[in-house]
Image 1: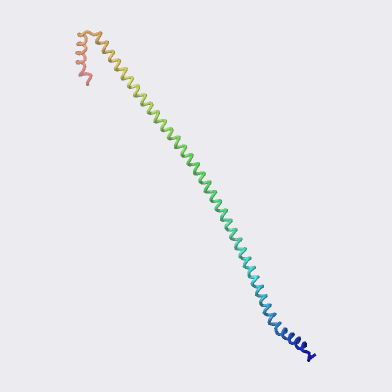
Image 2: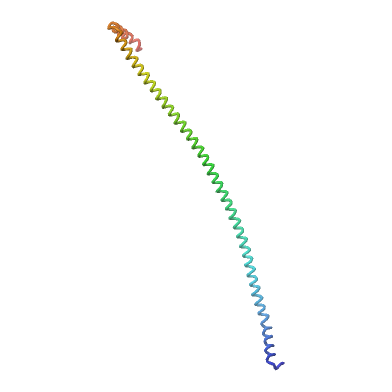
Length: 160
């Protein structure tokens, strides 16, 4: 057995494997441990990123709800303002219509008063012309002279 080269090759193989086994196993273990730590760190980092993403998602959802509520409030405010503006415009229109109606009534009354005055003046003119014509035809020259003298005599009294 000691002279058999296969024995020595086998023994050398076993010794080489025995000497190499411990450092290789240490290196292999360290590599595996390092890889396990790396995977564990990646998993932790992924978990942390997931939690951050969920927190950001919740924050953005809250901000979206707040923005929607604010938009609805702005829309409601605009609707209320439009209603108030419409009511104000309608009231202003009603006042304007009433003012124009009153102006029209005032113009009608003024035109009516002018027409009545013109008719009255025309009636007075017609009456004076008729009275003058009647007096000329019915009075004599002596009666006319007496009436003129009487009017001249009463003139100073009427002027005071």
